[in-house]
Image 1 (cartoon, rainbow, N blue to C red):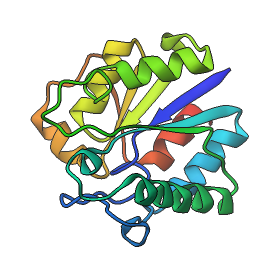
Image 2: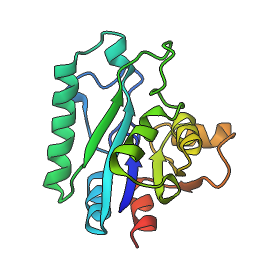
Image 3: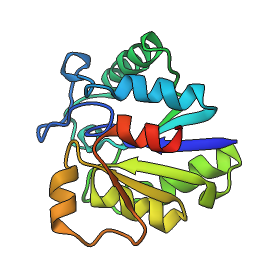
Image 4: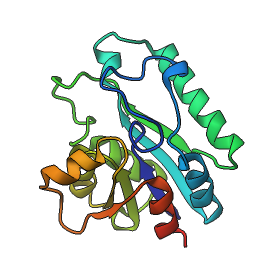
Length: 177
């Protein structure tokens, strides 16, 4: 099985320093929905792994997060794609949980649930914590320049062998030529 793990904010949709707190605030990045469809058509299972500290901070509740994810899933489906699962860490950044990226807990759970060897999985993200989680889990990593990607690239310190792509569309074209 081919599996790709995507961060959500900054990779699939536009990010916000004030968090995405409602379905109306969720706006896809140009080409991201079609990129997911491309990956799916090439035989990839597509899973989202996202930190959602806004839950832990009380900025939105589980039903709102479910509505945001429903809007995202519907938009992906309308573009001809499909999300196999959405995993999220509900904890605030200050918490000491194992699931919040840069820790690998969420990714390790995905690998275990889907029964896939880490070295055959690519994680696509826009922040250093995405890349660090991928590296710690044993996955390959791609940094996209959307979202916080440019800032992450300029800051350096990325795990060795991290590929850099313009956006999710370019990453999908690389993985599914």
